[in-house]
Structure formats: structure tokens, C-alpha cells
Image (cartoon, rainbow, N blue to C red; front, top):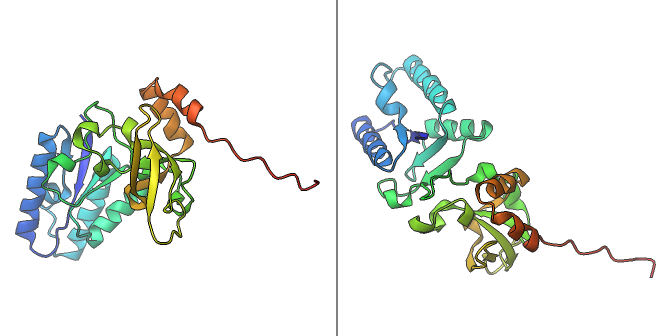
Length: 230
């Protein structure tokens, strides 16, 4: 069972926010993960309104996060403490998933085949700024229906579309091709995490052996340089 760190706001309406964290953990646990929220644990002896104790609670939270396999960011509001958790996870390669509707478990990053889903950590850094055409890209988990939400179904070849370029105009649509079943998909550029790292492709071929030959068959071929001597 994978350990998941549940991040949500604490400051403000403390009682409500702690109740929310309890509910998020309950729903996540029912989805099959070991869900831990710092609000529930460290608030028992760290008073968030006392600066020294708040600082201690934040440090303890990051230590807990360092031992977690994933970070789940619950809700649309990102507090100061949550920003620190997101930055820590990014710096330490901990996959981060965002749940805009945290009480809807059908959108949780759970794969029916038991494998861990892909996140931005599986992408080349800053690849969101790249042109996606003829690149292997990672689809965000929430763009897939729950029954199809597997790492294999997050990998697509971007074939074309006005949204391929980061400075697109008029439309952000990109067209994707699945490497195994050859399904086609047209989505918004923002539904993609970025360009897959070579290591991510290697990991996927280990998880799904049938993927390997398909990647080779679909591997984009670079255009030859124009012979300027002619």
C-alpha cells in the first residue's frame, strides 16, 4: 500500500479545515492508499497560531512528506504551507497530483492495474515550453476515465495540432496517437503534463512489455538537414 501525503489548507477556519482533512484521508484510504495529513497528526501538539509551533509543524510535515510516495493537493485553494509542500515535492522528485474536487474519489490518481500513475516528475523539466509535435507526452490522470486511468494510457504521441507550439494562436488543440491501440485523441494542450523523460519510457516498457516494439515503430524520424551545397 503506497503512502500518500494529503495537503490541504489549515489556517482560517481551523475546525472546518481539520474536518476536511479527516474526510480527505478517509476517502483516500477507502481508495486503497495509506493517507496521512499533517493537520490531523501534528495539530495535536503544534498550535498553528504560535509561530514557533507552526514552524515545528511545517518541518515535521516535510519530514513526513519525504517518506511519502505521492503528494495529493486537495482543493483549488493553495495556502502558503501547501506551496512549500509542493516545492519540496518537486525538489525531491515526489509525484504531485492535484484534486480540484477533493471529495470526488472517482478523480483520484488510482490506477486499476495497481501501477503508480505518471505526473510531472515523469516529464523533462520545463518541457511545457517546448513544441509537442512528434513528441511523447504524458496525459494528466484526470483526463482519463477511471477505468482507463493507467500509466500506459497516459503516454501518447503528439502528432499535430495548432496547440503544439507553446505560443499557439487561435486554438490550443493537440492531436494524440496512442502507441498500443492506435486510438486518436484531440485535447487541449493544458491536459498534458509535458514531454516524457527517456527514463519514463524505459519504465513503461518494463511495466508493459508490449509497448516496446510499438514505441520503436512509432518513433518519430528526424527530418534530414537540407544540403546547402546544392
